[in-house]
Image 1 (cartoon, rainbow, N blue to C red):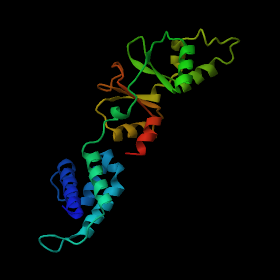
Image 2: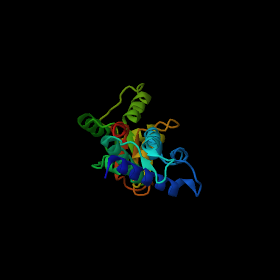
Image 3: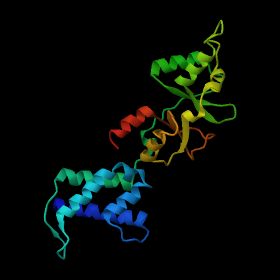
Length: 231
């Protein structure tokens, strides 16, 4: 099979998938399909410029005025391979949990702050997971700890060794993290984490995205930066 035949096969597979998912019986062009899908599908949105260039390349490869259509050019092998890879990413987007930290440690409000600070220093953590007294989960973050220190700076004596996480919890902002279900894909996860309307540091992945469910994974802005290099 020539590169052109592989390319056209991938193009047709993508077009058929887009029509099934997004055009609702209309006879839209490939470019309209891409535009419509990008409003609802973040994987398509992420790859929209590349997909549009593939639409232009398809028009350069096929001569539509002849029947049957005649192939008049042959694309490079690396372009065909990239197109096939992007098609897979769109139809079968990777789950966010596969890129999240899964070796998690859980702490309680009675955990000493000194222990957490030592852990953050040793393992370069920016946050740790805490299970609250009502069995919901949340985070203790460096920012929350800093807020606690700032609020207590005027005290004559602030004993880190005697401070518990329950003392720091009131200074944590709940909007610093969001719970998401384990089925969320990397594109939706990255969009949630980078949403400019609310500044969050991490996504807590649970079975159904509920705060009382034990976290299965933790996805932070640092993982996001790595993901964006390969998305």
